[in-house]
Every structure is written in C-alpha cells, then in structure tokens.
Image (cartoon, rainbow, N blue to C red; front, top):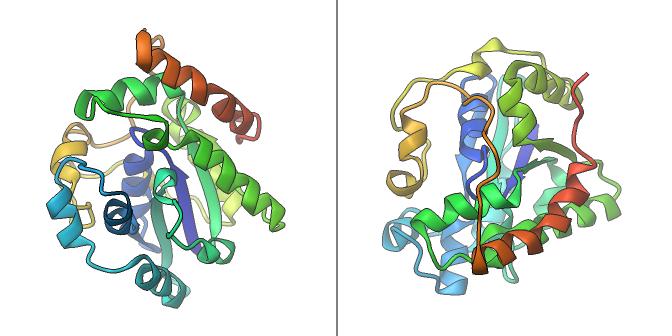
Length: 240
C-alpha cells in the first residue's frame, strides 16, 4: 500500500507520521515535495537552506521515486504530504496510485499556531483551498479518499485510529498509540523549528481547549479558510 496523508501545517500530521512509523509494516517519508516547493516559490521559510540541501531532487524525480517504490507483504509506504506544496509544477499523477487520507484541523487553530513561527502566513501557506481542490480531484477520478479530523483523534486516539485502519484494510496495531520522545531519523531537516514541542511527547495530546481568539488579518485568514474546512469536515470518519 502507498498511503498518502494530506494535511495543512500545524495539524496532527507529524504525530500521525510518528504513529504509523511505529508499525513494523510501514516506512514513512516526511514531506517529499518541500524542497521543490521552496525552489518554485522562492519563499523564505525557516531553515530554507537546510531544507533545500536535504531535498535536492526535482519534483519530477520525487514523483518517479514515489511511483517506483513498491510495497511488500511486510512493508507499506506512508507519505506525509502538505497540501500547500501541490502548486503548479508539482506533479499529481502519483496520487491515483495511492490510498489517500485528508487530515483536518480547525483553521483558527492552524493560523494561530503557524503565525508563531511565520508571522507572514497567508492563505496559500495554510493550504485549506488546496486541500479541498485535491480532494475534489480524487473524487472526480473515482477515488474515495478518507477524511480524519484531528479534533476527533485527540479526543479518542485509539478509537479513531482503529476506524482508520479498518477503512484502509489494515490490522490494528496498538504500537500506533505511542512513540519514543526526541528527534526521529525520518524527521525532515526542518524539525528543529517545527517539531520541537512534538519531540517532548510520547503519544497523542488530549483534547484542545476553546478556539484561539484571532483579530485583524489573522481572523480574516481563518474565516476565509472555514468553508473549505467545513466542506471536508462533513466527509470525516465519524466515531461510533
């Protein structure tokens, strides 16, 4: 199985990657298109030079690697993708050869978290419109992508991960609920900036509190993303 998990930033995307990495039947790849995305956009993200050095491939080379990788009875492939990376110049044909899961988080939480490290955050950075676009493309290609809301996962990790595994045709593995603290060998080069708090954890965090109060430009940004979030939220796996 090639499992492509699509998220915006500041979601449970890295925790989900850590969760699947604990399984003996999965290997993981952290944001394969980040380097080409920075080259194409020229964005000055934190640790830009380190990211570019760690991702020297072109977008086409990365897609070829994604398509060449073969799973076996013991090894499935987990790709952690950021929706905002899928701009013009980043190929998408590999998507239809994957099982696709879309991971959601309320835009107010995403904007508040992202802005702490990147105050210039804009609509393209948080990726909600792109997430809805990719979902629609897969539906048009007769795929049935799954949707998982991080709020539901944080409320009951075991229950929601069991449901996800069931939908994917995977056996349940309780090792998915915990991981060792500290950096991981499969972390992207950007981990020192974005994963510091996660490195202190050994499992999924509990439920979040009230939505953060945003104002001005950040509030407008979150409100603009809300319709895309709500559209996909309707498709999310519901706990029983």
